[in-house]
Image (cartoon, rainbow, N blue to C red; front, side, top):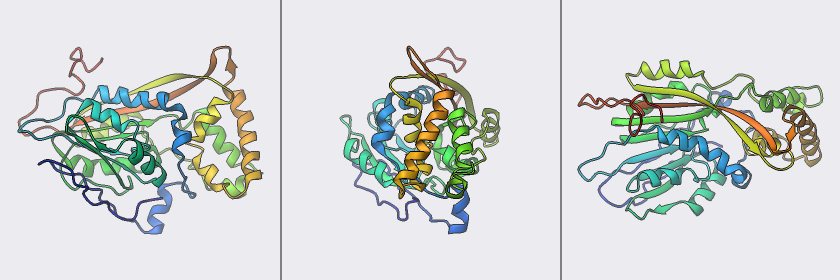
Length: 328
């Protein structure tokens, strides 16, 4: 559920700025269209069952983020919007060891896991903290060097409308970087929607899942970011995840896209198991098991946008450590 109160600054050491979650609770009628009608309850353990596969796109995104503004003893200040259990937030500290990093999420379960496993000072004098925030309404309160979001914005219809506020919240030379799934029409999701809308289930699940995609095509993101005057790099990658075990695609979506359905059926174990059995059979046909495992194709869309520094920065997005054409 959306967080309802801001988290105060938590004693970040040193002269650098802290990141404070700015949270506004929208009226019910405004909030309703933005998320499924049944808000999912997140399960960090289920989500982390495929942690390696889920972390790879974040690492690929991070590799294209240029070095952050640095100088005068000021440490980079970073917000990870939709940080989940914090496992990839830690990668930000590996890249920028002195950074002040705040992971933001609206799931108490995810934040509890993140604080328990990832929060605290880093060996080089940086710090990782976590705070509640709602991506639909969050905005930076002080200039940030990096706003990064991994596999979160697909839950937020209209999220490109927030780009101007987020971009305004960047320091000169700061970066907005995000990755979103581009698999709304993949069998894993299309079959879920079709089953939920079937005669047997539509009474309970017909309004639970969105039937329009919140994610733009890459060209749409490029247009929106260029309109802000950004140096923008947008691309897509389709990963072929080779998953072991029985019914691994079902196990995967239990941690993400299926959460609204599981929440809607949480009070009826028999109905929940019946839906899962039907959905499992559909997934088995769509993603047949091979001798090497089950292949799950997964398309993802990436964007990195740099706010031009006052000094007319001359570096292109993604050229740090590259061939100069933005490709690694």
